[in-house]
Every structure is written in C-alpha cells, then in structure tokens.
Length: 463
Image (cartoon, rainbow, N blue to C red; front, side):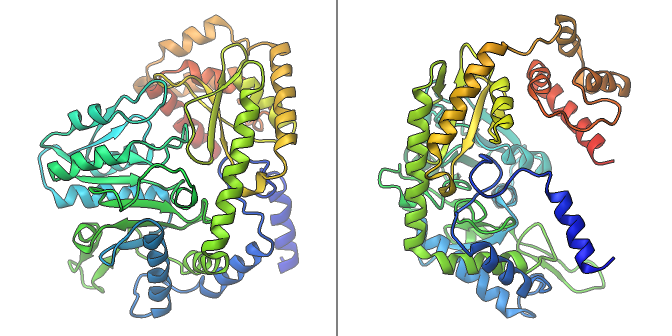
C-alpha cells in the first residue's frame, strides 16, 4: 500500500471514534482549544519517537527533557530543592509506582494501603499487582470527601501508604489533605496525593483547598500531563518529596549475562516521543497560559454546574472543587439521558451506583467547553425531557433475577453468551447505538460479577 492509501484507511477507521476536539466528549480526552498545539506536539513527538529512554547516558536529551518536566511540576506543586520525580506513561503507572515504593520501603507482613472508597481504581490495581491489602474507608455520604477521623483510625502497623485525592474522579471533590497528612507524619507513614486530574488546575484556582507539598506530611504526588496540562496521551509525573522516598521505586538487575537492567518506571524501553511532546507543550503554553486555561475551564464548569442545578429533576452530587461534575436524578433514568445526549452528539460518562453514590453521569469539562455551555445545557434539558417521556429501561424481571443469581467465579461461556444476547450484543453484532439497556443490566450485577462480565466482554472485543 502507498503511504497515501494507508493514511486514508486510517482516517476512515478514525471516523467512527468519538471526537477528541471541540468539547463534545466529556470524558477520556482533554482539549485546550489552543491553535497549533496539536501540530507542535506531533512534530516534537516525531523528533524523539525513535529515541529510547532506557539508558539516559546514551540519549542525554531525554534526561534533560525529563528533568525539565519534573522541575516544572515540582515548582507548580509546592516542591522544594529536595523534590524529585519521574515521568511515567500515565496516572495509573504513577499510582502503581507510589504504592510499590511505599511497600518496598517498609517491609511488613501483609502490607496495606488506606484509602477513601472514592480513590481511583488504579490503587486497587496496584494492590492486586503488588500483593497489598486495600483498606477502603467510607467517605462522607453527602460531600463524598474522605473522613479524616475514619482515615486516621484505619492506620495500623501494617499501613505502608495512605492515599487522598485532589480531586476524586467520580465527584470532583478534594479530600481534606492537611489533617490526614498530619496524622501520617505523626505515625511515620507515607501520604500520597492523587492529583492526576487536578494537579495542573488546582494550583491556579483562587479558592482551592491545600493539597500539595506545602502541606506537612505529603510525601508524594501524582499529576498527569495528558490531562489539564493538555499534552498528548502517555505522560504523567510522580513526584517524591526527596530522593530517599523515591529510591525503592527503582529496579535494577544484574542477574543475567546481558546489560544490567536499570529502570525508573515499570517499563524498560520507553519512547522519547511522549516526553518530547510534553516538554514542548509545557514550554509553549507556560505558566500564564495555564493560568488562563485553568480559569477558562473552571469558569465553564461553574456555568454548566449551575445550569444542571436549574434543570428539573437533576441534582449535582457533592460540591465540586475543580473541573469535574457528577449529577444524578431521582425521577429520570440517567442511562437513558446519556443515550439521548449521545444522539445529540455529546458524550457524557455513566457511573454506576456505589455505596452512598447513586447512578450518575460524569462530566470532564475542559477549556474547549467555554462558549458552548448554553448549547450543552439546552441539549441536556431536551435529553432529560425525552428520557422522562420514554421512561426507564424495561428489563424483564426474570433477566434481572438471572443476573443477581449468577456466581462470578462460576460463570460459564453459555451464561455469558446469554447475557450478551439479552443486551443485544450477541452474534458478533456491532455495539448498539444506545447503551441504556447494557448499563441497566450491568447495574443489576454485583461489583464482582460486573467485573467478570466486563472482562469477558473485553475478551470478545479483542478477538
């Protein structure tokens, strides 16, 4: 195939994806709406895509780029001259490494991490990978913020790390970091602030709660560059208050006849492309640019949040501190609302009920949403009216009973095929345009069963 034919085929495939620009996809993507930024990032990425970050002595340019990025993040987040960091492939890897470093720094029997139940699932993944127990602490049922007293009470001799969010993804609220971090300092336990999604916005917010290294007791912070730093996908930063705290995250092995393996992250070979692209974007936008982008996104969030509160039947969950909003309804099926919004070319993210948090719709607002708030709210108002007229999804009671009776550890291929068929996903058919039925079926499943169902479904997709 000619290069032109290859690119044409790729463009045809991409035509079926959600839009990544224009502010109509309110999850997964982050759009600055800054002209020329994509081209700059692409050119910088291409200039270093063949460079291997495995050995910084072989490619010193990457060493300089990474140190510059870490220094920028540390300065933004209250770091000191002792603050160190690592550029990772994303927020999940940053969280994994924070847990790994904490576990290896304090060898205890049956190590545990204490976190609010609203903490990102990446920490559950880290616990699964590294053999660490999760002690999930209930949050305030109205504010969805961590309860400092309950968090402190959960710390014991096995605790290697305490996690707080700034903000939590599900509801966009910042946990009370100072009292929790102070207790960690007193007990000699590490305290990690997951600022993956808020770390490049909250420093520019005039009324943001304290959360960074200026808070005594905070030992590490994760912040994603491919979120509100508006860099291309594949870059995050994990900061540690000092080099001693970071050292256990490193891996070295001389137990084979090849080169001595030495890694700062979970990866060995790392393309220099994402690092170069992030460096270029950070330098181009600069502090003043990020201050403007943050103010724009925060302002748009306030407009959308106030507009949601004004729509009959909708209510915002908690008191969002940043650029994330979750809203629910007591008389309208939110899964149907999501489908109605999709029909109007907006993607809003369904979230299932969990403890005190009811089923809701999540919005990630970016600078690209500024100026389009009225159109979004008008379509949301129309979607709510359409969902109210249509009524909730009607799933036969016997199907719900069948799901509730399933054992996730004993799920058979036949049972899974039956569920796919019930959801309209059987026979190799394309994904349905409307997902309310699928989401309703998943909502009826216990969390462990939902996990198993989605794992099986993922296997069907990748086959």
